[in-house]
Length: 182
Length: 251
Image 1 (cartoon, each protein chain N blue to C red):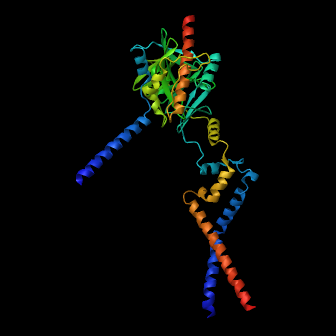
Image 2 (cartoon, each protein chain N blue to C red):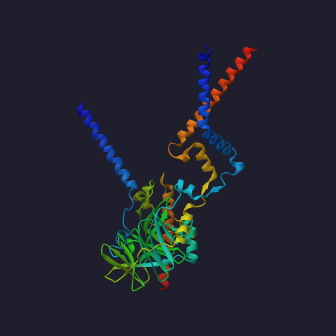
């Protein structure tokens, strides 16, 4: 009798620990700092930050991509050669999601969710979702040229990530144009 | 014989009278608010708003206490509870306000572990974080040489470049932003903005009708009034019925 009770107690404790760990993951905010993301993206030597102003036609295009006017007037980006990194934020349902994008030769080379603040939809941080963005480019009408499968229960978060990917691809074209002029 | 026969009637009558007197006010309120709520659309109760200060205070619709305010050029940055304001305009920002300064026409405020750069119109230029060299925990915000933004964190100073792109750790002499008393006119504007357009009349009437306006035990009071009304109705009908029966017997 005592053995059975002990077995049940251990099972209950393990299940409780599992639920707690899942809950903890769901409530976790920052998965990776922006600095760490940049270090990884540029082999430990990120280039100095530059700024891109979201004004005029660029702002209109960003508004069309996001579905709302961008919060900020300027954005930092880090670029070396054909490779640029962007750290962008967009609201999923109610809270902002921070994601890092690396664009190389006009296609997404890397995408990572850096911080997630909602109570559900955190599955977008996992490679099974983020890996879909690798190689994605932008069509003439500023849509992704790659199909991204959604996640049940994370629709708004998925849509937010797709909007940010489109924005990163669009903005990287402008930095390349800037570099070409400069 | 007569006394024993009339005792229950008198007792019922006394109860009816006493309870009626005690419950009168509540019953009137119940009936009056019920009548009004029955005609919400016609009376447009949801379109009228009450802005009385004491009523809004009662409902707790009041700004949290002012925690600190900084003057940045021609503008004021203030924190009320968890809310931060650029003059009377609420900002989408979270964290503790550590200071604010004006540099080259840009208002820079340190909040939480970020620096927000705002235009003269309160528009967000950018939010700077750790990727731009902002230290993890900002303690103070100031100016070095009047034109370079400086932050202090854990005893170290971090100075921004002239374009406010990046911070680097360096020892500098700085004028640190100090909290200042917020002008009364601005304080009232913020408070008025916080209260919004007031409370809907329909909402207030519903709360009076249910007793919720009196707090946790208010509904129980109205329940008691409703039960008293039931008793009054029942006892009233009973007494009338007995009286009518007695009159018929006499005939």
